[in-house]
Structures are given as structure tokens and as C-alpha cells.
Length: 42
Image 1 (cartoon, rainbow, N blue to C red):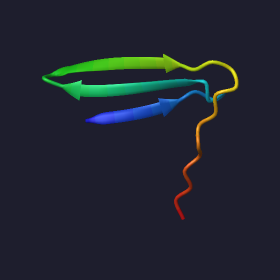
Image 2 (image 1 turned 180 degrees about the vertical axis):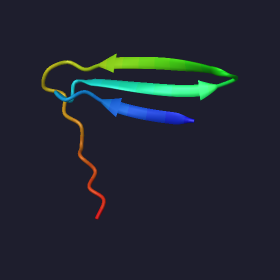
Image 3 (image 1 turned 30 degrees about the vertical axis):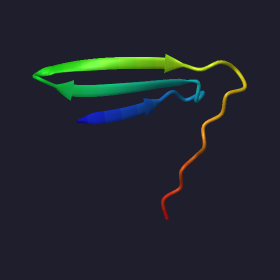
Image 4 (image 1 turned 180 degrees about the horizontal axis):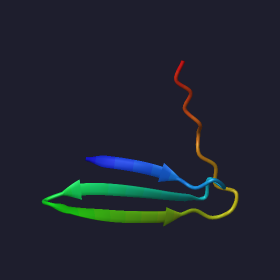
């Protein structure tokens, strides 16, 4: 099971993964000027 969370300033991304009865949290912070594409579901 994976869950992704993005910070309000869109510079940090956090992935929470659950497997083998434990939670793992991975955090990635991107440099200034890096932009994510926004996905719109209609």
C-alpha cells in the first residue's frame, strides 16, 4: 500500500508505504525552480 503527500509549497514529497506489518516513510525535497505537473481528473 502506497500513499503520497505533497507539501503546500510543492517542494517536498512524502511517500508512506506499509508492508510486512510496518510503515516506512520516505521524504524527498526538491530544489527551487523544480515544478511538478498538476494532474486534473474531470
